[in-house]
Image 1 (cartoon, rainbow, N blue to C red):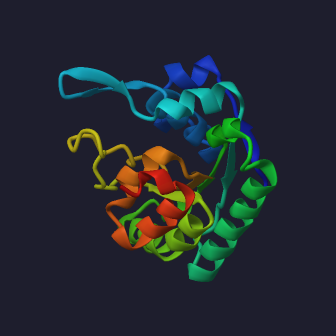
Image 2: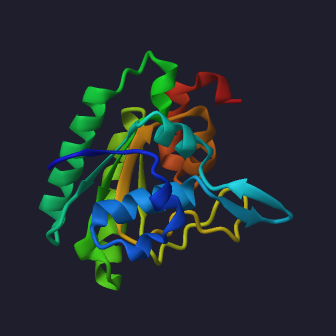
Length: 195
């Protein structure tokens, strides 16, 4: 698998992600336009993912595209490869490294069966990531997981199916309360939050 850096480019902001033919460009545009953009939440406007702008500006988002339709084994191998790439880039003692992330896009999974396959892979693999102090996120067009801040917002919807890897941060407690069996691993990393 090859990984390319996602960098800020005004053409990605001004053009809808769906207008791009190459899956990597679709991901770059989605990150630039959606994650770093503003969405209405309640009575205020919010940036969907505040860390994404810093990640994008510092060129710390890497993208790979898995073009074939993977089965469980190929999916697991692609995620393991992405995890190894990520771990080679991150320094857990450097607080700036919280802005690093890796995204693997799976354009061949863009149908209901593929979305279900991606969701199963996420559920199967997420515990091993959390144990290591990492987060694994699933994104696809029909993802119904709501924002922890505004339940009307569906921040995990994307124009192309993908899995994203990043370091766990203190604010992830809100995400992990949805899977309480993983909270002890969070408290191992952030013991002050265990009250």
